Amino acid sequence: MKPYDVIILGGGAAGLMCAREAAARGRKVLVLEQNPKPAPKILVSGGGRCNFTNLHATPANYVTTNPSFVPAVFSRFTPKDFIALVQSRSIPYHEKKDGQLFCDKSAKDIIELLVTRAGEKGVQILLGQKVGEITHSEDSFIIRSSEEIFSAQRLVVATGGLSWPQLGASDLGFKIANQFGLKIIKPSPALVGLAFPEREMDRFKDLAGIHLRVGVSCGDWNLVEDLMITHKGLSGPVMLNASLYWNPGQEITVNWVPEFTVESTYDQLKKDRAAGGRGKFRVWFSERIPRRLAERIAWNAEARGAWSALSDERLLALARDIHAYRFIPAGTFGYRMAEVMKGGVDTREISRETMEAKKVPGLFFIGEVLDVTGQLGGFNFQWAWASGFVAGQAV
Ligand SMILES: Cc1cc2nc3c(=O)[nH]c(=O)nc-3n(C[C@H](O)[C@H](O)[C@H](O)COP(=O)(O)OP(=O)(O)OC[C@H]3O[C@@H](n4cnc5c(N)ncnc54)[C@H](O)[C@@H]3O)c2cc1C
Image (cartoon, rainbow, N blue to C red; front, side, top):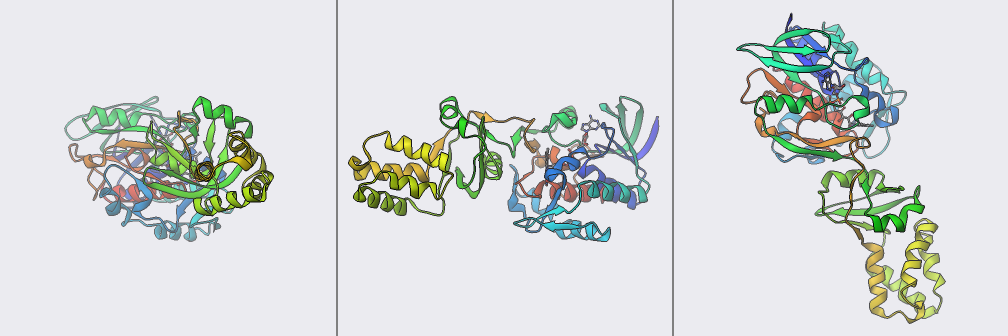
C-alpha cells in the first residue's frame, strides 16, 4: 500500500487545480484518474477551445440550493486569478462575447497548463485508475482502484458530475457521500436541450436546424439569446441556460420577436387587416424570423379564420401567441447531451473555508460533484478552479 498525504479522486479541472496548490504547500499528492488521459472534459469543452472562464463571473451566475456558500469560495480565486495563470504561460486567448474567454488554439493548452504546473510541484498523476471503493480507518483513507491500493490522510473527491457518460462520468462521488452520510441534492441534467411533448414535435420537427434570437422565460428567469430548433425539441444557448432553471412539469415561454412588444405587434396586425392583405403580416414576420418558421406560425394563425375577418380580440390573441409561445417540455435531452449536472453533494455539509466535509475530517469535495452549477459561458470551469484552489490551501 502506497501512503500519501493527499489523494485526489479525478484528474479533471478541479482535481488538477487542487493538486498543484496542495503540493505547493509541501504535501505529497497523488491524483487518480480513470481515463488514459487527464481532463477529458476540458479537451471537448468550448468546441475544443475551452471557454475557461468569464470576465463577468459573479456568484449570481450559479444555481445552488445554498446560495450563501458560493461567494466565500468564489472570492478566494477569481477569473482574474485564472487569467493571470493563462497569461503567465503565454497561452493565446480571446473574448468571444459577453466576457467568455476561449483559447485561440486548443483546449489542450489549458490541460497542459494544469498538468505542467502540478508536475513542477511534484504531483503524481496516475492514469487508467478507476477507483471503486474507499474505506476509512481512524486517521487514513484506503483507496482501491482497478489497479492498486493506496492510502492517504486526506481524500479529495473531484470526480465531477454525471453528464457525458461517454467520457466516463461516474457516480463515485455520490457513493462516497452516501457512505459517509452526507446529503445529496437530487441531480439532473442541465445546460441541455428541452424535449418537445408529442403534439409540439409534430408541429416543429420539420423545422429542425432553424436558428434565431428569441426571448425565453421559465418562472422568474428570462433571457434573450440564440435558440435552435432540433428534431427532438429546442436547444441553443438560450434553452441550455433555461434548463438550469427548469423543473419537470414547469412551463417554458418563448417570445419569437423579443425586440417588439405585444402592443406593437398588435398594431401591425391591425394595420395589415385594414390594408386588406393577409400576406402582409407574413412578410413583416418573415423579415424578423426565419421564413419557414414565420410561415408556420402565421399559417396556424390564419387557419383560424379569414384574415380580414379576424376580430380585434383574435388579433390580440395572435400577437400574444407570437410573444408568448408556451409549452411544457417532456423532459431534457438527458445526460449524454448535457454539459453539466445540476444538484449534487449538499454544500451545507461542507465547510466554505476549506471544502472539507463538516462531519468527516479529512474528506473534501470540490468541483461539479457539489450542488453548485454555473450558467453557460465559462462559469463552470471558474467554479472548478475556485473550489479546487480553496481545498488545495487546506488539505
Ligand atoms: C461537452 C462539454 C463542454 C463543456 N464546455 C464547457 C466550457 O466551455 N466552459 C465551462 O466552464 N464548462 C464547460 N463544461 C463543463 C465543465 O467541463 C465541467 O463543469 C468541469 O469539467 C467540472 O470539473 P470537475 O473537475 O468537477 O469534473 P471533471 O472535469 O469532469 O473531472 C472529473 C474527473 O474524475 C474522473 N473520475 C470520475 N469517476 C472516477 C473514478 N471512479 N475513478 C477515477 N477517476 C474518476 C473523470 O474521468 C474526470 O476526469 C463542458 C462540459 C461538457 C460535457
